[in-house]
Length: 330
Image 1: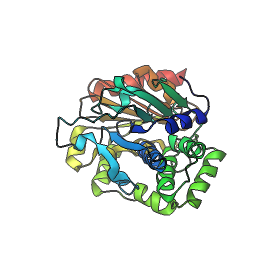
Image 2: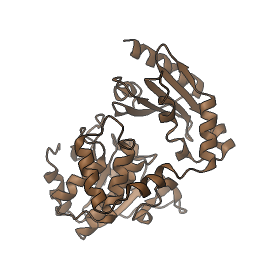
Image 3: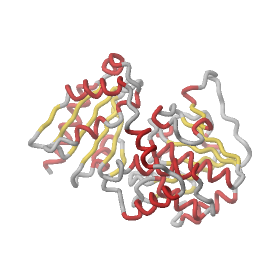
Image 4: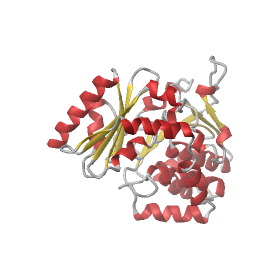
């Protein structure tokens, strides 16, 4: 069911009592910030709420209020862990363009009704109830409006994760998805207790040496095609192991190589643990990387998208760059 009004989603949250909240693999600020904000909103309404993610929380987000409430299944010592399903439980999936992106969260999803809240144009409307607002900068921005529909006061506990969601998904308010409304929401969140200086320090000025060493290796491998205006680089498993870097420390590399004045599109090719290649794309012009990534089963936003492709890093890199040059020339 496609929900045209947020009031329809608010009605569902008021109607039911038991909720599981989850989001996509490779967690980012919008995923975690939105999960925790909704967690506190539902707690205000005296609901039973659990936040469950497949992947562990990146260390730069450990400052978020309520972070200890998240169950990270990758950190479960008991490999036979199964999430207990209470009667009439609703699964709420945030910031995920398709259901497969949340991974295995140790429940039978077919048993549950799903509320799907997202802002990605590539969303497949996989929920029983879908609210997709592609104009919003982030799911965090949507949840701010949802909180008003649910009559939930925006406390400091809610304001901090919502501001985190917005500031990360807008690239500190410089991506094309930043609207006047985005600044209006941010204004209200700061009034409610979100401290922009502290939040951005935690997220952007909290690097380990390992992350900078990995960035250095990636920059040494960078290539630029001035004719097609593409910059790209690779991160291999060996590079991650040599620098003792964490998986999340690859975030931001693709944005760094987009900053080159000759580049209109940037690509990061990263070997992931399952043997596939994660492809992250960014653009600063009119080229739509969301549409391009759908060729390979991915998706995202017009200026920020990604996909995963089977194969070795050399073959995948050659294939994607060739296809990208062709698309740009057309």
